[in-house]
Amino acid sequence: MSISQAAALGIAIVALLSTVAIFALAWRREKGSATVGTLDKVARTARVRRPAFVSSATADEEQVVDEAGVAEEPPGPPPAPKVIELTEAEFGETRRQFLNRATGVSFGAFLAFFGITSLAFLWPRLSGGFGGKIDAGTVSDIKDAIFQPDGSIEPFYVAEAKTYVVPFDESLIGETDFDGLDVVVEGLTGLWQKCVHLGCRVPWCSSSQGFECPCHGSKYNAAGEYDSGPAPRNLDRFALEVVDGRLIINTGSVRDTPRATVKTVPYPQGVNCL
Ligand code: FES
Image (cartoon, rainbow, N blue to C red):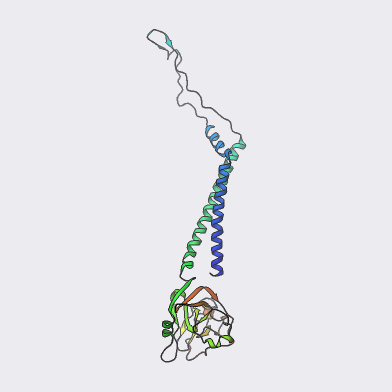
């Protein structure tokens, strides 16, 4: 995993943990504070409801006489609701608690969304695709595709890895900056197609047997070693390994090296494309 992927994964995990912590804190405060519920109930009760209908009839008009001729007492008005006075401070406290909770929930939702989105973005990289390990095929098939009958080469392009697989003379590696790096296995190395100047895709030039960038003219030989132009270093390459005869390109591990002082392949070997 590259440094940027590790950093993004770390941010996502921190965001998720923060979200869980915020919700846990809010839940504990909610549980531990009996005052909040009490105040809410009090506030609701404090609304003074007026009776829907107040009779204007007098007691005499509504007097009812039973069979024995004895006057019955008319029903009285319904009892008035109980009014509880709240102070300004109590109402203010309730509003603050509501706003605090709303802010906490909004922030937690944002962090959760950010964390889940980050994990979704990283997931394909952790399980395959560019940014992870990619199976380029068997070493023998790759070499058959690279070496041409006339002695020239054609890079084996792995689109999913954005990589040109090219030959590398391992007998010369001790004289280069690739010595000690995991970028050469079984006479092959994997070049990232991206120009190290400003990132254009660098095409292969069959006639010159090198890579020539159309954007600003940087040129590299068949091993991706710097030849000329504004590029600051050799073409970057990925860590390689061979598993059960298959070449595995780890596109999550990029290796960069300074401009080559010792070239392992002559360049140009014919007419340049640029
Ligand atoms: S991007 Fe390739 S030379 Fe500038």
